[in-house]
Length: 87
Image: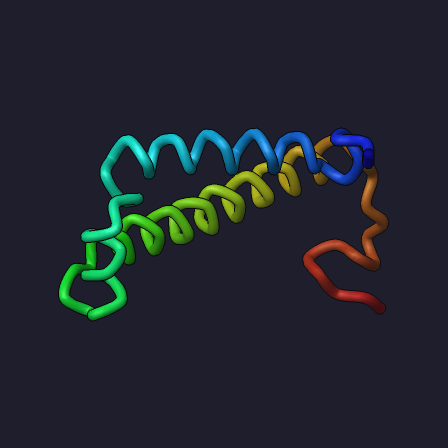
């Protein structure tokens, strides 16, 4: 069997299990709800998934911007590459 800690697989598995558990408890796993989603008469599952994608994208972008600011303060950047200009 493959190691679960390679390339973040364990964290992906844990997030998937937790996300699936929450969706199942919210009732999004019921066949009636899913068939209504496929018939385009119920948009609840789409709204939840789209909200999760947007929140993850915004949170990831903000975390990356914070990390860049921390790195800029901690590391020396030669004046020729500051402000994104390479001369």
